Amino acid sequence: MESSAFFNRVGKVALGSRLRALSAYITAQAGEIYALYGLDFKPKWFPVFYALTERNQLTAAQLAADIGYSHQAVVKVVNELLEAGLVEQVSDPADARTHPVTLSARGEQVAEVLKVQCADVVCALEHLEAQSRLSLSAALGEFESLLTEQSLLSRVQREKALRESLSSPAQKAVPQEGRP
Image 1: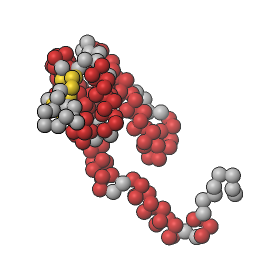
Image 2: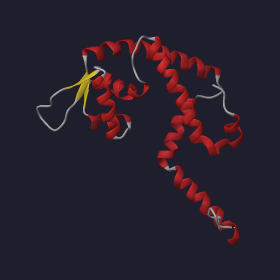
Image 3: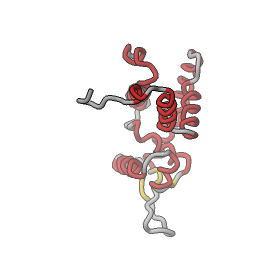
Image 4: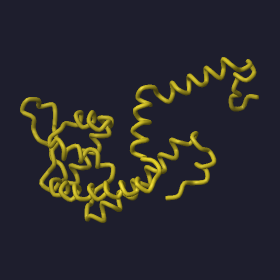
């Protein structure tokens, strides 16, 4: 994957777009990696499926809290995993309103292959990071932590207020579309 000239030219302002492009590239590669290991598995299933390999039986609400997805997004993925035969719903005698899911027998088989695949992916990523001057995963973790402490929006609001406090009234006004 080569960084586009646009992203290099625009720089930090296009961070979100650049991360989406990188994510799309990695997601496409992940699909090919699953196929390499003989798995009929969609990359978007990974967080839900992997969480179930760790904790065996979870509700959609528990999965959403665990992986940081919306409840609705998790329900959609769970339904796809149910259709694929990788998970099954179980009854919760303590609460008939909840429908926990667990890996099916086929899901357990996929989990075994996935465990080997994940180990190979980790090794490949470690080699990639060794070739780099920095660790992307560490940098992302740090950015996420800093943005949890103070959102990007509040940071931009602070910069805007600072700029406006130091500017003349004419510099504060931003022309609206169709207006001079």
